[in-house]
Image 1 (cartoon, rainbow, N blue to C red):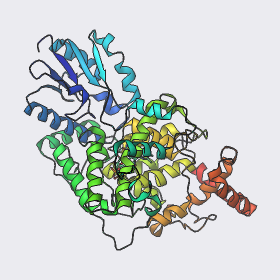
Image 2: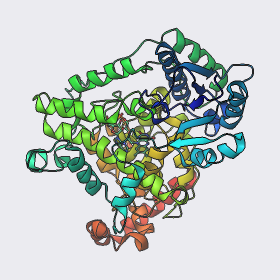
Image 3: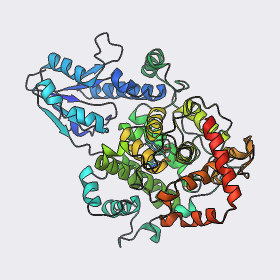
Amino acid sequence: MNPRGTLRFVLGDQLSLAMSSLRDIDPENDVVLMAEVWDECTYVRHHPKKIAFLFSAMRHFADELRKLGFTVDYRRLDAPDNKGGFRAELLAAIERHRPARIVVTEPGEWRVLEDMKGWSEFCGCPVDIRVDDRFFATREDFSRWAEGRRELRMEYFYRDLRRRTGLLMEPDRKPAGDRWNFDKENRKRLPDSAVPPQPPRFTPDRITRQVIDLVGGRFGDHFGDLEPFWFAVTRRDAEAALSHFLEHALPHFGDYQDAMKEGETTLYHSVIGLYLNCGLLDPRDVCRRAEAEYHAGRAPLNAVEGFVRQILGWREYVRGLYWREMPGYAETNHFGAARPLPGFYWTGETDLNCLRQCIAQTKEGAYAHHIQRLMVTGNFALLAGLAPKEVCEWYLIVYADAYEWVELPNTHGMALFADGGILGSKPYAASGKYIDRMSDYCRNCRYDVKASTGPDACPFNYLYWNFLTEHRAKLKDNRRMSLIYNALDRMDRRKVENMRAEAKRFLDAL
Ligand SMILES: Cc1cc2nc3c(=O)[nH]c(=O)nc-3n(C[C@H](O)[C@H](O)[C@H](O)COP(=O)(O)OP(=O)(O)OC[C@H]3O[C@@H](n4cnc5c(N)ncnc54)[C@H](O)[C@@H]3O)c2cc1C
Ligand code: SF4
């Protein structure tokens, strides 16, 4: 490298040619550094499928850069002199290339950004940390929006972004269909006769096979099945997965967004979170393409709005919240929950069928859709008072799309209400009745979803009422909880006591 050149460090979830770190690249003088490092695979013991996905996608991206004429210094995990961590790899790369400066795009995790701020001093070389502008809103946009607000509700941030981007907006600045939100239409139970489309499965190529062997050898003892491996690992295949979703699943995405069915892991969901989060897909492009399906009359508004809301609304909102509230957010524990994560979260061996199904598919595919994460594994964690840190670590480990900036607010804020209401206006707590309404899990369960006491009673039922009783002091003044507390107060006292006793027995045995 020319000593005036720049070392451009591209992290594993920054696999886009549009990264700010690559923007002014000089192919003659600059070197792109990419590194597979042990520390990032093991600071939590990620699902092997997630590691294989990222390593393979990184290797394919490095090849793409080389084909475009850039010099890439790619550090494989199994290279004998691999240093195992970002700092050591960077130092070694400086020795090799003697750059005048380092350019990097800010990472998605607070932990890594804090470390990155010390790189310049550590390496004795200027480090330019650039904004990650793959999002609709910058971190500053969110802070400005949040400033002075009493409540930070996603809905209002989302509406602002709809107005700013023009997505699903009429020329008179009204929302398409004259409504911002079609959620009420998006809670249908899946009919038994429905046959949801399967996402396309990509056969591993030579590079992916090499990575699978490597990951199997090094991380085979982590939770989760490495094979079958069928994720897209290139932009082209990720685009194909998106196109398949838009054509076959988007039209029903809204209707069955909250539905769950035994043996059907993805239903009408897109399974693109992993591609968006590592840069293979661009959220702006995804939303525009979904909007085009609505305008072309191929997908109804409740489906397209519901889908766009997830990306333009929730995804942007949780990112803004994460950066605004860190590092304190990771410590939140509103209910003082302290019970260790039960072993069945790692084995799936439980007789609660809903949990068994969701955990088994997570282990196999590193995927569960939103309602499975929120209303089954998350709901159980909330009702059983599982320690937020342990729950959070589980979610970060088990899903192929998991990165702290998106996972932490969803876990601490949405699933556990550990943040005391920064993200949500009330806990997403529910009894077995909700799971029965939205799935067929209860049909094949040894418990009776209609019973709240007795040996066959569905544990979600007594845990739910027990949770409400236990946290009455913290929840009773929440207006959105008043109906539920009225129902609790009208309940026969003996029944409530019996449910509490069942809950204690169940929790003591966990
Ligand atoms: C406890 C918990 C943990 C979660 N952890 C993660 C995580 O680590 N990474 C992650 O990307 N999502 C996470 N989510 C959000 C959501 O469940 C996943 O994004 C979604 O299930 C991914 O599947 P999909 O691509 O098929 O999404 P679809 O249902 O098809 O939705 C489309 C896209 O919208 C975005 N999206 C949807 N819901 C959310 C949300 N609540 N927050 C942010 N983006 C959203 C995702 O990018 C997703 O790919 C979590 C949710 C919960 C309740
Ligand atoms: S009966 Fe209860 S435990 Fe069994 S599947 Fe239904 S909700 Fe889950």
